[in-house]
Length: 162
Image 1 (cartoon, rainbow, N blue to C red):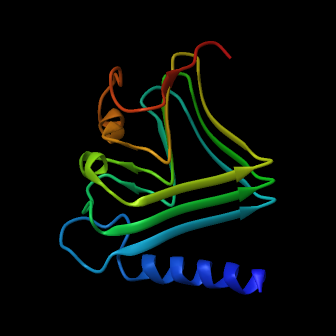
Image 2 (cartoon, rainbow, N blue to C red; image 1 turned 120 degrees about the horizontal axis):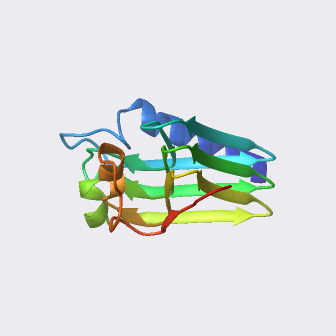
């Protein structure tokens, strides 16, 4: 029964994304569900160099989207390794069951990150910057469009000299 529920959850998530929900912008559409299921998995995203950017979104909306378009955002990670990293002047932005963008601050969805026996790392080194949101909303998508992300969003941090 548990396997059947998991398969159904993945199928619903795939269907929602196929119907243009989730990260889409503009017009209405039917509200969707976004789900990411990770078991014994590594998810890695890196950038290296000045003006480089790595953006990682798991069950998230980013950029220009309709704030009422997503009803449920869920990430379930077990025995997994999730890494988003930027080196030497780049920018790392990681969103897990969260929204980043202007509409993100006004979204009233269910946002759940169930993470056990896992590592979730958003890392910046050598003058790079890192922003991470887990089950939280921010307008920090603008950080990708500017050289300084000071004062934007939640879970914001800077790393130096790794």
